[in-house]
Image 1 (spheres, helix red, strand yellow):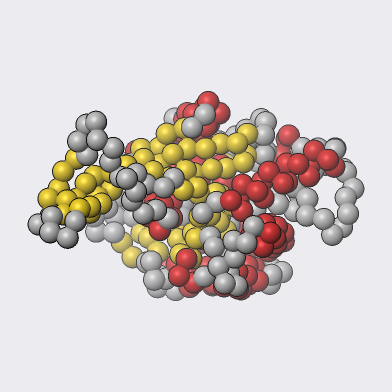
Image 2 (image 1 turned 90 degrees about the vertical axis):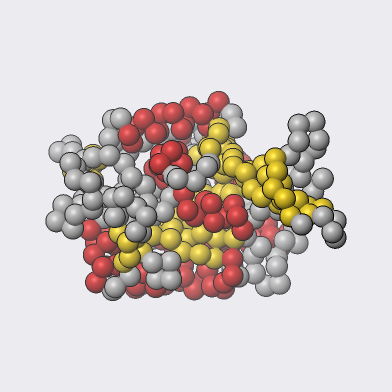
Amino acid sequence: MVTLRETPPGRPGPKRVMRRIGLWGAPGSGKTSFLASLNVAVAQSRQDWALVGVNDDSVAFLTEATAALTDQRRFPKATESMAELSWVMMSESEVRIGGRWRKEIVRVPLQFHVDLIDAPGDTFKSGTKTDDDAVTLKDLGFDEDESDEESQSDTERLIDSLAACDGIVYLYDPIREKEKGDAYKYFQGTLAQIAQRALQNRRFDGNRLPHHLAVCITKFDEPRVYQTADRRGYLTVDVDDDHMFPRVHDDSAEDLFEDLCKVSPTGSAALVRKSIKRYFHDSKVRYFATSSIGFYLGKSIRFRTADYQNVVPDGHGGHTIRGAVHPINVLEPVLWLGQQLDGPATH
């Protein structure tokens, strides 16, 4: 017999192991926007989740960055100082407990960390010469500090944070890659350092890294990305979505990633995909086509192919957001990682 009940007050219920999810991506790949839109995605989700800041910096980031997206309709500014940001995704899960003849299903907390070391470019000053073979902050997506010792310390913190995570969200920006062709440059430098940490700490799972990896193709709302997915026949529509926003079918996201890597001007983006295959277990990797802001609706209720671009030039060299923000596949990769990493119940 199986019954469903809440954990009784005063009785210790099963607990879940707290897991950590890190965020990885080249400069300009949309890490800050992704995190800001995660708060919006949680609020719009039909699932029962909450996103809670662990420290004051994390709470302030969510408050300010979310307001930038939703109220001011602009992309959030980079933070002004190095900060270790951390949030907890909170919900409940059902766990079956009991003996051979009598079993119960108990609702228990389901929680996992989302961590990021945020080191904005204006914190570091360029100009310092370093060993050509050394992996510096610039190789990882940041400018270098005037002090080699301090830069190395910041680099170590960044790599240590990713290496210690159980799951990683990797952001691949196809628009930046089309224009600059430097995705592999930033990817391989970070990957080499993570692999070194895994070897030192004996974390390799066979000949692969132990991490689960959510590969997010960013800027799905951008016409060049959206139209590529459309031409290739990768699009689908969530019938439960009131706005009928297009999405890339789960089975097609990896194919879209491969197609977009092929148009890299340097040809090196294909090495990102090959490296993912070489260093991570296929069963621990999943691909998503994401957009931090989603498509433009205007006064319409549903998506319109005739007018969907939600980012337009602001006339001053930057960009502004036209309408309301509707994140696409921002919450999903985080939840997928959290569910894959959900630890066994303990009393």
